[in-house]
Amino acid sequence: MPEKRLTLNSEKRKAIADVFQNHFEQNSPKNELHKKAIADYNQARTDMKVMAETVVRYHQPQEDVDTIRSMIAKYNRSGGELYNDNCFYFTAPPRMETDSDGSKREVVDEEHVKFDLSEEFARSYYRDEIKAKGLNPDFQVAINENYDKSSPSYYTMETQVNKFTGHETSSNDNKTTMSYRDEWEKDFQLTTIGSSYCHSRMFAVDQDTFKLFKSFNSLKENVIMAHQQLYSHVNSKMEKLKLGLKSYRYFDQAKSLADKLGIALNEGILNESSSMALSVYSPENLASLLEDKVEQTREEKIAIARAVMQQQQSVN
Image 1: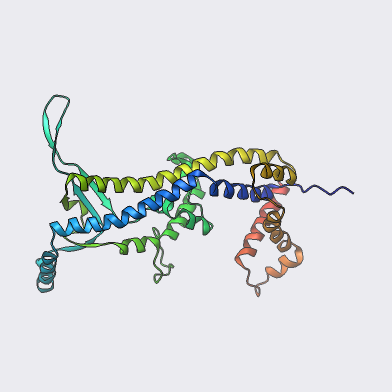
Image 2: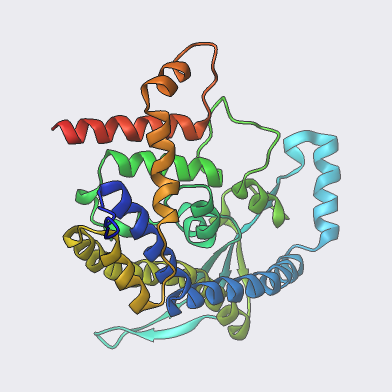
């Protein structure tokens, strides 16, 4: 008898799509550019921390910091102000600029350099780690700044990702564990003379040094841009793939496509995604799992939820 062809459903198509997406991402030249952007930023960050400290200590010598610290110990806030900061403004030498009326005026360019971890940058820098956690680091780039496309799931994912990176906390969080954001805050701080208001301190540098700080900020933006390009490149492929998968009724059709693209695809991935749901949803197993004395695993809870959703969809 001829072997029965394996029929696809929405869950099996999703499992197949995940295999294709992983292949597209791992083999995309945009993925290499993203990793290179992160490596370039890391190297520049190491160099810029040294340069920032050199500039700040030139304008605010350590002996002056020590003097103010001793004055604070003696006179409290009347002795002066010190602040541990990782935010700095650097200014280039003044230059003359001619406006449309021919009038000349002196201009001082500023460059704002921060060694902290912003939300957007965190999603790009830690994209792989966020995905490994089962979260979606692309939720924001997917809407391309069109917030009309944002849905309740968008804000749910924003909360989950921000909690993972440390940009959102709650009273239930484990305060003994440092988040990525905490690590970056403690990674580099300089004791500066003045208040916490970063813009109140302007550190003048020569033109070459100013260009280096400006270039450092560009490298930070490059990480975000490379992330956006990686998502766009893969998403354009996935949109075409999902249209194709919708038209496929059998697994061997998807397998034929995968073979042509050099993607390893076998029926095992379908079993991994569906066998749990099928076994858990049997009346005997489901009844035992729903008893109070049995503690369900996370995988079992997910499998039950998926099975219930599929059952509802088939009824509808």
